[in-house]
Length: 259
Ligand SMILES: O=C(O)c1ccccc1NCC(=O)[C@H](O)[C@H](O)COP(=O)(O)O
Image (tube, rainbow, N blue to C red; front, top):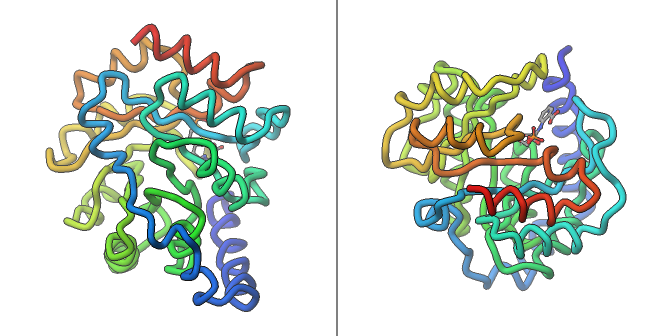
């Protein structure tokens, strides 16, 4: 079993357990169900920098990235740096994140928040809404076309935006549908962890213009962004490059200043 299969196996069991503890009615009673989202796709269209900065404590490819800051310090730093949005990893077992991180982020900043999670069930989309997210991630590598359709339509009904992540042409072709807002190309192969910006470059021309194009993972220099912009990318998701420093917010500030 590769790591992605393991993550999904664990996630499916986790969702079953959570459903038995926290009923949907409790999620739906959250104050955030009344809240109108802040659109990341609009911010990216209007931005010159397009940075989506990620809160990421650790990952399967790097055991510890950073555990020294509070969520509030990191996300406030990202907002002050001028990030268009923030991605908050909520998976506990593999990334050391939680839904509390998302809630604390929501309480700290007023820019779009992505619930970065391995979504396999509508319940997790209700959780995202209940904890203040503006958008969700769907990963084509682990979902069928029918699942992408029903999950993305469910998210749209709740007023959330949808970022669909692909890594190759097959995943892209099976996924294109009107209920998506942004299409992200992950430069990291989630089965082998190999990283290359070539994935973004090769897939760019196949992504229809109505979707905002986002390049994800392995971006560690402003030069990388200059290379990707001519391919039509408007969003750049960066985690480790900021989180591995002594001050993620300052690192993001210095980075964005150079764009
Ligand atoms: O980051 C990993 O090792 C990873 C492994 C398996 C599944 C997902 C993984 N990462 C999630 C992400 O998409 C990245 O955190 C995000 O794109 C930022 O990447 P980076 O800038 O390289 O930290």
